[in-house]
Amino acid sequence: MKTRITKAGVRALVAAAIGITLAACSTTPERIESLETARAQVGTVESSPRAGVAATYISEARRSLDTANRLADAGGDREDIEYHAEVASLNAQIANNKILAAQARDEINRAEEERQAVLIKSRERQAQAQAQQAREAELRAETLEQELSDLKAKKTARGVELTLGDVLFATGESTLKPAAFRTVDRLAEVLKEDPNRKVVIEGHTDSVGSEEFNQQLSERRAMAVQSALVTRGVSPDQITAIGRGESMPIASNEDAGGRQQNRRVELIFQDGEGRSRVASDSD
Amino acid sequence: MNRILVTILGVGVIGMFTACGGVSELTRERVARSETSVQQAQQTLGNSEEGALDMQRARENIEAARRELEEGNAEAAERFAVRAQLYADLAVAKSESAEARRAADELQASLRTLREEANRQEGTN
Image (cartoon, rainbow over all chains, first blue to last red; front, side, top):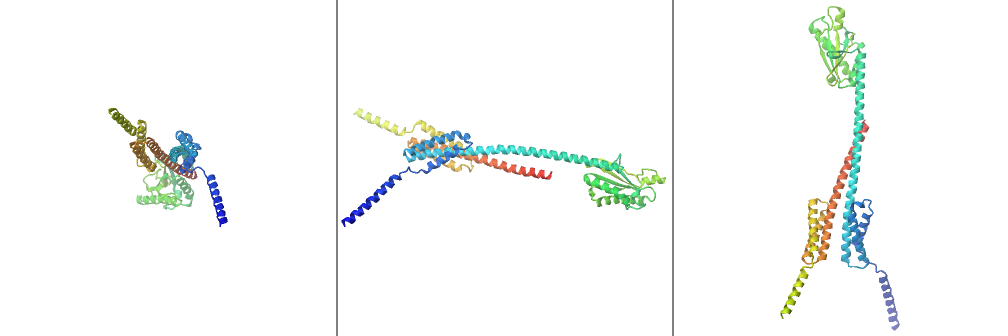
């Protein structure tokens, strides 16, 4: 019995000794959460490339953190340590927000510069596009002039006129002869190239036959040309067809040559602004 | 006897002054300054959501500072005043950085639209 007590006592002593030794080894400073947080926050703002914008707050954060660290190392009062850690943390958070604001402002400045650059480039591109359109319009105008000139258009008081002679129609008929197709094709191309361009088609006759018949014939002939142009893709909005009958002769109706000149269809061209351009093609 | 009474009264008066005068004028000024800062911060923020929580903390701390002043606890009053000032500064800083971020994000979005528009124009031209 005596021996058993002794062994138990020894085991208890050994256990106590181990316990004391472990306790002694584990005496590390108490962990204070707010101090740990402040250390991390102060470290972050100090290492920011934009730390300069919040220098005062960062140096105040550092000063308070050093105080908190000193107190913690010296086993100081927990309330004091937490107070200085909180002051350090608040200063670091203010600094961090000032840094974030500065970074956002930097971003704004860069974006603003880029926006200006994009706008300038966009304006340049628009100017180039406008210049290109102007060149194309000029080219189209030149092409039109050339076409009209080729078709023997002439400038008159009413504008640029093109006269299609009666050879394009069978006598007394309003159906276009195949010989007229090439001229009509070219006119259609000219009008399609510039949808703003308008044309007035006027049908004219000689004085042979009744006035009423001539009026109707002139209308039908003008409409035949209009129809041929529309069939070739010209917008009806660009065309006005009018019958003038025998009312506007350009030569004497006394002889065959004069009557032939009077039997005609005239096309009076206007550009998009309503100015008249005319082509003329007598047979 | 009179001398004893005067001495007792004198000690009493000094004791009373010590208790009430435990808070220096400097501390009172510091608390007052902090209070002014909190009020200014509140005016700056208005009803802004950013920093509202920190503003609440600033108000709580300034109230605590006033209480400590009344109780003659100078150090505690100063500490609450410092905290109040810092929370007010933090509320304003948060509001300003949120405002700057919003502006930056808006500008970036507008820049993206502009770039897309420019690219479309380029494609068209």
